[in-house]
Length: 200
Image 1 (spheres, rainbow, N blue to C red):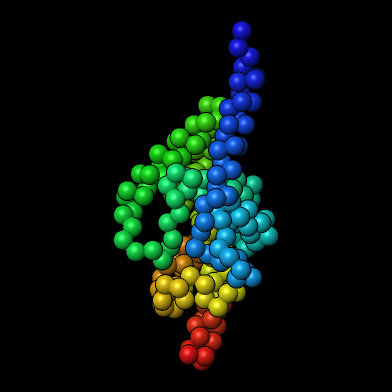
Image 2 (image 1 turned 90 degrees about the vertical axis):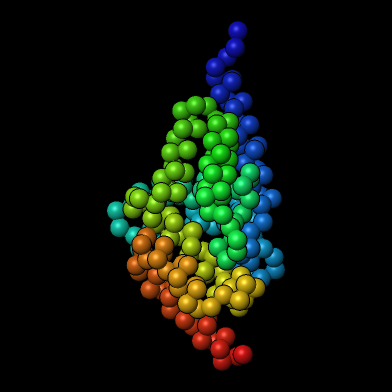
């Protein structure tokens, strides 16, 4: 006779084995020491620490929920791949569809209730309609911004991104989640591009 507890554990372990693939998804962002690009699992771990460390700069958030969102938000890249912020020619609608299908497949590996809970967290992050989700989205923009300023421009230099493009692409999302974090990020962006202009 089947043992529901054993089946549940098997499903959970299958999910954990599947998400190990996130370690193989390379992002465009460099490590702070500039030696290589980070992978999506490293990005998610780093963001969880951002949430733990910086949550005092947001109002009315559920810190645990923010951490959970950030640990799962890029799991869909296992199927859909990474879509760089500064990439060109991306069909946003097609990407959203691929990511939704990936979320349904991967979270569907878990026992039903557990998978539904993670799917709901992922959808909340994507919609960014709650304070916790807006803060999570802000950190997801802040982390690569910080890495780019620490590595002489990083993806900005590689893609010939201007200061105004940085402000337009990062600013609204960060400011919506935490105006205080955007004030600091804006200073670092201004300093980076000011230094770049002086050394050009």
